[in-house]
Image (tube, rainbow, N blue to C red; front, side, top):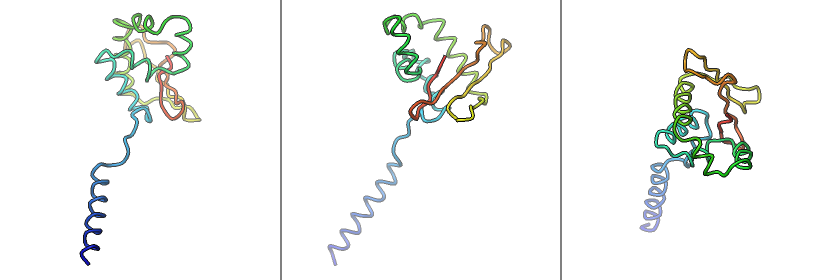
Length: 136
C-alpha cells in the first residue's frame, strides 16, 4: 500500500512539473508578428550579425555573400540602413499585411506620408521551412 502511495505521489509530481514548465518553446519566427518583433529587438541592440543570419531570407544572404564577404555586408548595413529598417518595421508592426493565397508571403505597402524614401516595392516577408524571413 505504501508503494502505491509513493508511485501516485511521484506521478502527480511529474504531471505537475510538466504542466508548470509549459509546452515546448515556440520559435518566434513561426509567426510573422514574432519575426517582426525579433527583428526590431535585434536592431535595437544593434545585433546585425544575428539579424542577417536569422531574419534575412537565407537564399538572399547566400546571393549577397557571393558578391561580398559577410562582414562587409554587416558593416555596410550599420548606421542609416539599420535605422531605416527599424523605422519601417515599427510602421508595419501596426499594420495588417496582404497575405498571398498560399500563405507563404506577407506584404505591406508603405507610403511616403509614413516615411521618407519608403520602398516602392513594399516590404515582403516570406515563409521558408516553417519560419518567416525578411525578403528585402
